[in-house]
Length: 164
Image (cartoon, rainbow, N blue to C red; front, top):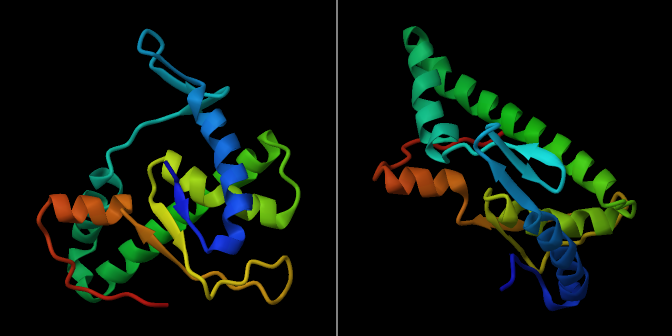
């Protein structure tokens, strides 16, 4: 089972990455007597997708209901900043733990890691140019993202667009 979709020319590299990401996530230990979830020597937490998406959005939006014009902007920025920070720090730790140094090798671990950790399935599109220089260009879809899943399960429609 593939944990990513990439153009044919990138398959070998990403398949190799999936193998070591899969090995990493197979070392799972859950110890309710200590309240711990451990994966390969790292403590993890489980959080429902809705808590980090639709419910978070609605809760923070209510905090700013006196200024409705800013509430969506604030919650979008906050969600982005939290997710970006978590992703960036997880990637740094993961790269270090697996001794990944090459930029393209680091990139190739991202989509399988995203899938195995439940964030989303990553589909890297053919127009991408994953090069370790100023010509780097990555076009992708996050299919089955935890955010969209939570909104769909709640049977709620998103009536906003956000682009920065």
